[in-house]
Amino acid sequence: MRFASSLVRPVSDRWRELVQRWLQRRAPPSRSVTLDHGKLFILPSRAGMAFLLVVVLLWLLGTNYENNLVFALTFLLVSLFAVLPVHTFANLSGLQLRLLAVRPAFAGDYAEAEIYVSRSGSRAREWLQVGWTGDAGGDGEPGVFLELVERDSAEICVALPVVRRGRVRAPRLTVESRFPLGLFRCWSLVDLDIEFLVYPRPVAAGPLPTGAALGEGDSGETRRGGDDFAGLRAYQPGDSLRHLAWKQYAAGRDLNSKDYESQADARLWLEWDLLAGRDVETRLGNLCHWALQAERANTAYGLRIPGTTLTPAQGPDHLQRVLTALALFPVSVPAKGAR
Image (cartoon, rainbow, N blue to C red):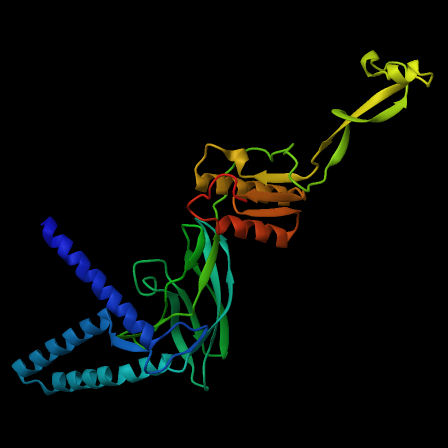
């Protein structure tokens, strides 16, 4: 039994690969597609097969009882069944689809593609459904329904659930219609060359990190009371005796106190090394959560991850750069110290 299943799986994979190659030649990826006879397929639906079964039963009934009325009804239904594919096919033929925009999303959410659908000519287009392959007419989530009767075009958003981060290639879109009676299903598999950018799923990591160390070339704010000598200032009552400039005082100068200061980075850095001990995806999720938290707090923040350094800033553009860097971070972590 296990051997048989191992044989069936490669055959099914091979068949799927051949179908994909055939579709690539027949309907290659394009941001704008016009449906014609080369891209449309039509077959009887389940309701159509049941309709044919009823026609056969009526023909057998009319033959057995030699009933002309049953024969007339049978021939009428057969003629209707023969005319319906023409109308179903014409309902999709000439339909135009064009990709307008692709919206990024977080892993575990829905990514949306905005699509412009228009008709050619004055013929009304009814009972249209657009969804991802496997959704329209299948067991997945239903696609988007629309009709082009009193309007020539429409803009729709088709949502795709995304699980992993990075660049996700969308499957083909299924455009179908069962107009007018649902006895035939006409469809097309359209590839609008859609690719989604999926950000890591935010994972709570506690409050924003503060007091990050200064990096090379960074500037910070000066704070008194550190370990670096900053100069002399006039003595004030209460100054520590250890900080008095005794040598200068012994040379006959005024009594002064030594002033010390330190530099601390006033900017927020989201550091990869701050999350040591966690796996790659958890770290990326934590950094994503911190970036969103800092943006909501209107705090300038920078990002330091292996291979990428973004200087502190804030705003939608900076947030998008940070999230993009996290989304495109490789699965294999670069060697330690690589920047």
